[in-house]
Length: 128
Image (tube, rainbow, N blue to C red; front, side, top):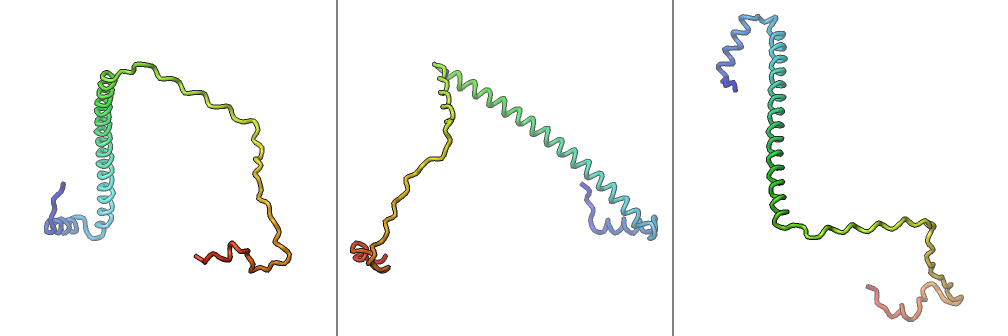
C-alpha cells in the first residue's frame, strides 16, 4: 500500500520535528495514530462486508447447483411407491417400579475348615 523505506521515514521524521516542534510532536503522533487506527478499522469493516457478500453469492450459486442436481436425480430415479409411515412408538410403561434381580445365595464355610483350605478343585490349579 504505502511503500516507505527507512531513508524516507527518516526524512519525514526530521521534517515533522522541525515543523511541529519537539514539544507538540508526541501529541501530533497520538492524533496521527488515532486516525490511522480509525482508517484501518473502516478498511477492515469494508473488507469483511465484501467477503461476506462474496460468501453469500457463492452459497447461492452452490444451492442452485445442488437443486439442479437433485432435480436431475429425482427425474432419473422417480419414487414408484410412496414411503410407508413409521409405526407409532409404543406407549410408555405405566409401571416404572423397581425391578427385582435374583440375589446369589451365600453358603457359610464349614466349621472345621481353615482360611487356607480352598477345596480340592482350587488346590490343583497353578497360579497364573
